[in-house]
Amino acid sequence: MLTLLSMFYYICLRRRSRSGTRGEALTSRRAVESGQRAVLPISVEVEQYAKEVLDFSSHYGSENSMSYTMWNLAGVPNVYPSSGDFTQTAVFRAYGTWWEQCASAPPPFRRTPKAFHSQDYIELGFEEPVYPTAVEVLETYYPGTIVQILACSHNPFSQNPPTDVRWEVLWSGEPTKVLTPQARQFSPTIKHIGFPTNLLRLEVNSSLLDYYTELDAVILRGLIQLILSHLTLPDLCRLAQSCKLLHQHCCDPLQYTQLSLQPYWGRLSDASLGHLQGRCTLLQRLNLSWTGNRGALTLTGFSSFMKACGLSLGCLELSCCHFLNEPCLEVISQTCPALQDLNLSSCDRLQPQAFAHISKLTRLRRLVLYRTKIEQTAILSILTFCIELKHLNLGSCVRIEDYDVVASMLAARCRSLCSLDLWRCRNLTDRGLAELVSGCRMLEELDLGWCPTLQSSTGCFQQLARCLPRLRKLFLTANRTVCDSDVEELAGSCPSLQHLDILGTRLVSAASLKKLLQSCPRLLLLDVSFCSQIDMRVVQELSSLFPKVAIKKSFTQ
Image 1 (cartoon, rainbow, N blue to C red):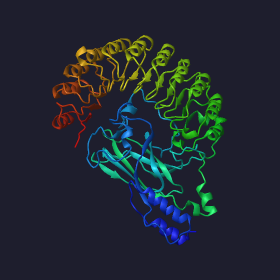
Image 2: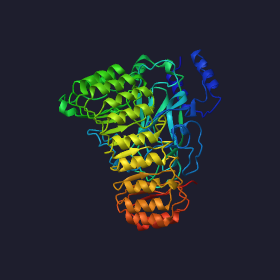
Image 3: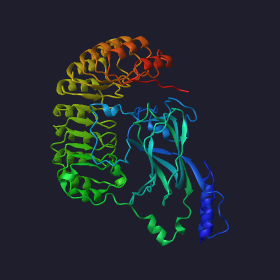
Image 4: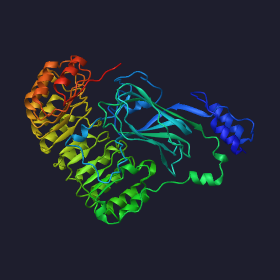
């Protein structure tokens, strides 16, 4: 049996290890378990990079490549210590406040804790469960986005189902704006926790950043679990303690017309919903985003809550809720007749047939299906019956076979459409776009970023500008065919334009940009990164002439 003195000595001795250290750890463990008090290892600290990306809320990249995706955070660094815009890094979908200013952005929930700043997250699995001593994040471009680092008691690689999943905050802070976009190693002082972990969660807030943040790798340092079996019973009991979700509040249902449970994602369970159920009979807006994963919520608990509280529900946020299945969507369609706003963003484990139930929600006005497995039959059925849609997000929905058919249906059935996100749709052509803008002339936001089948030579972008005079946001990201005539048509036809992204084009000159800036007095954001004719000298000149416009020019060092 280890004495308290030897345990203290054991914990204080440290080492750094990469591959080939597990044998040493097992040897040390056998020595301890056999009672060999004199054979204490001289090194107990492990350094490891992420083994696997387990879950995330969004990324800039596509679902079938590695460029700018969260999957780049697994393994050793690709870029660090270099700085700049590199495709081998992990990049979230949004930055700044531009997206929050759009008409498609939902209003904030009341009573969201002031300390809850998180907008996106990523969960990483590591090989060896350890007691964390340090977490280091290699940020290679516009750092400062991380606001919280958490550790989980569950081993994501265990074959046994989790029973008591606990999350502990290792570090938290407010959103920051770092003065330089240069690379850095972020290593905050973390809290010591009472359980070993190989599952970390990084939560980020990019609202203060001037451009997309890029992350390269995450390092977890910690002590290997070798002494747990030697703890006293009181210590084991302390490790088993968990936190309550909410303190008692007044039970008047009028206090619960809006309820955001996203800040409590790590503590929410069926029992939590059951506790709140009697207070939420007048519930109008519910945010369950990020909740319920790893068995914390079940169909039984979710269904019971929705049947009791869904009658008046107008808004339901379910982003990254991996407990959802087809019966859950069926329950929503049956219990929420007044639902107007449904967000299923990054619910990428929902099977395609589940989405057919959404067509029963005929009063929908906002529908977010970003990074889901919805297929063509289901989306066409939804558009047939949900004709009041004003905001639709189909970004990275890679299973839709023909976006021209979807565009045609939108033009015919959803003429009041205000915003449409087709980010990384791979098969929309000029014919589909022409039909869309001719039928949906109320569009104010249109995201066609990374849509490679659209070609400026067909005149589709100029027709878009002429048909959409109310346009406030247009993303033509990575379309290398965008040219001066397209920009000049936007300048002449879209005076309300506020956000324009033409990253990556080779054919736009400084003269056309100046004309655009003169003609669009409401312009706030202009991204000309990797536009070969627009160098930093031009950006500085235009920025001095139009100081109210944030002109973005990314770089690679």
